[in-house]
Image (cartoon, rainbow, N blue to C red; front, side, top):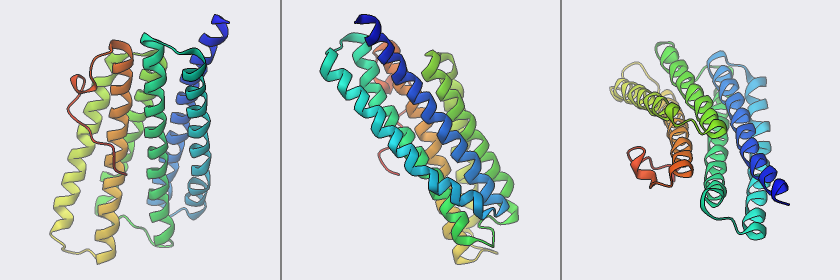
Length: 224
């Protein structure tokens, strides 16, 4: 009985890692569709998002069932509580990837990102993808040494967002549509980075039992 319970807990972690892999693929494909004007790829990202939503529902159902059936305490309890929050962050990250793909689809056959910002957007996506991959490793291995790297990548994403914001705020050489699209896009990538930080903070809580605020400055991921 105890072995089955521990197996169920391991499956919860495996499910979180699987969700992170799905989101990572969605992020990569969404950015490619955005920068390359690939409508088919954008459609695939949008169509795949409900599958990520379904995985969250399945994972949450398993976690709630274990909470009710096993009445866990200590680390096991923290794992299940953290898993419920982490699955929500991963689902939101999937939604944000779909939002990027929706911008790509809406602006097709044109490109939403002007030439002068393509490298910056590609860098934001690369940093967000790295942060997600490392957060997934933190979840799988409880390796908190990687948490600081995720936070650094998120800081760089924030800096790029501010850099682009300053450039487009001047309004020179941009159409109104480009300003709106860029403002949305940099916010989407910034929020993906914030959610990656939230994931590693949850693992920190799981491992140490310390308040989340002791691991990183407040990151509000209640929106988007």
